[in-house]
Image (cartoon, rainbow, N blue to C red; front, side):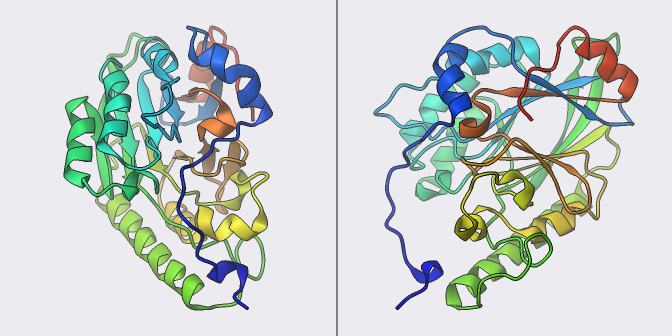
Length: 312
């Protein structure tokens, strides 16, 4: 009899099962101009705060309304940069990307995104990328970008924010975080090989990325740590991320890691080396969260005008 890891599950449309937070706030908050939750993230190099909004896992489909438009447009007034942690679509269809692109094209701050596993189900990769890029979205896949982000809340003209983007992959978090893993078989060995390849891509991208930045963020879809997996079943951990990513991240000067994918996860965690990690799947945070990057003085100054409202 095959083990759980050997069972090939059929592909089907994703059903988003909102958490209590999402059920209570999603419809009202996404349709309104309500203030977005704010969480401070200390970054010693930043003497002025930078507002980085993040969200992921829209799972957009053509047969249901796209609810995120008002909240995403609201980012323009409440953040300096928007990060999207993959799974913009449910099946990777160009028509689904077009629905998202119509909204993102109207966002007036820089938008940086990575692809998720659902986005990669589509076969028209060139058209998919062109659809997002025509809307002004910077799509990263083993690449990095340095953005001169205008700071609306300070007299300083801009800050240099480096973003390294990669999809990531599964593979699990054994043995560093949760002890012994599942027995090796073809499925787990294949995941381990892919996990090491994605970690190597991340390593190469971080090596090549500029260090002349005020803050550096790693944006990915899969998680580099089990500390943000929350109520996800242990048997699914091998599908949600891998520890190889964290081992790479902790060798570099990274200020924040943003990921999605874990719908039953929790918002905040850390890598084994202490790098802050945030799970921004919509099913976890409900709407975009603004991460207030800066040194202690800058955070205190900005937070007095935008009190912390996000779940941790």
